[in-house]
Image (cartoon, rainbow, N blue to C red):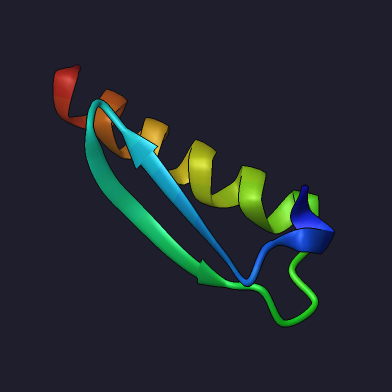
Length: 46
């Protein structure tokens, strides 16, 4: 799917957390954006 996409949107709890333009985007970069938004939420819960 990544190879077919021009843009990847990362959402968490119904909110847009990252808008990534695919110019050589890797799976690792998408996962980093997803995990970053998840960690940010966890930091505020503690």
